[in-house]
Image (cartoon, one colour):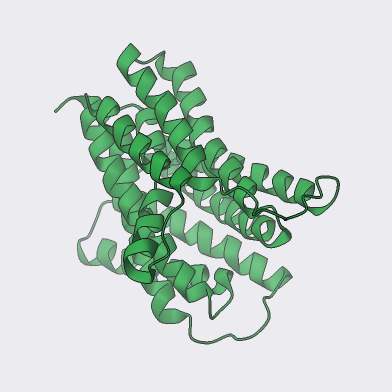
Amino acid sequence: MSGSGSAAGFGLLSATSWGGSDFVGGLGARRSPALLVVASGHIFSLLLLLAICRAMQVAMPGTSPLLYAAVGGFEGSLALALFYRALAMGAMGLTAALTGLLTALIPVLFSMVHEGLPAPLTFVGLGSGLVAIWLITHTPAAKGTVSNRASTPRLALLLGGLAGLGFGTQLILFKMASAGNILWTMTSARAAGVLALVIVLAIRPPKAPWRGFWLTGIAAGLLDTAGNLFYIQATRVGRLDVAAIVCSMYPAGTILLAAIVLREWPTVRQFLGIGLALAAVALLSA
C-alpha cells in the first residue's frame, strides 16, 4: 500500500474512533455538562496510558516530542472549551462547519508549505474532502428562524473559528510529536489536556448535576485516545494533509451512529457529504 493509502487507512480508523467518541460523549452530555464528560474521559485514559507505559516499561522519548504533544494536548483542550461555548451561544450549524473546515484546512496548508504540493489526484481528494466536511457539519437554520448576524452568532462564529484554529494546530503539533514513542506522546498530551480542563472547570464550573457522567466519559475518552493514536500513526506513514483531511471526516461517523442507534436520520445535504467523503477517501488512497 502507498504512503497516501496507508495514511488514509489509519485516518479512516481515527475518524471512526473520533466519531464514536463524539456520539458516546454526546449521549452523556444530554444528562451532564459536556466538559465533565470530557474531563472524566481524559483522566481515565491518562491513568490507563500511564499504567500501560509502566507495565510495558516503555522507553521515555526525547524532550521535543513530549513537549510538542503536551502543547498540543493543552491548547486542544482549551479549543474544545471554546467550541462548546460557541455552540451554546447560537448559530450551531454554521459554527460547527467553520470549526470543522478550519480544523482540516490549517494542517493542509502547513503540509503544502513544508512537504510541497501533493500529486494531482491527491489534490483533488483533498479538495473533495474539504467540501465533504462542510456539507456534513453545516446544518442550515430552520425555516422561520431569524438570523441575528449582528449579535450573538457573530461572537459564536469568532469562538468557533478560534476553536478550529486550535484543533488544526493540535493536529500539526501531534504530527511534530510523532517522532517519539506513540504511547508516551499520547500520555504527555493527555496529562496537559487534563490540566487545561481542570483550569477551565475551576474558572467556569458547570452547573449541576455533577453525577452520571463517568461511564460515558470513560467510553468516550477511550475512543478519543484510540483516534489520537491512529491519527499519529497516519502522520507517520504518509502526508500530514492526507491524514488531517480523512481524520476530520469523523462527524460522518457520529451522524451514522445517531441514525442507526437513535433513528436521527441525516439530512440530504449530510448524505451528499458522506458520499463525497467516501469518494475523497478513495482518491486519497489511490
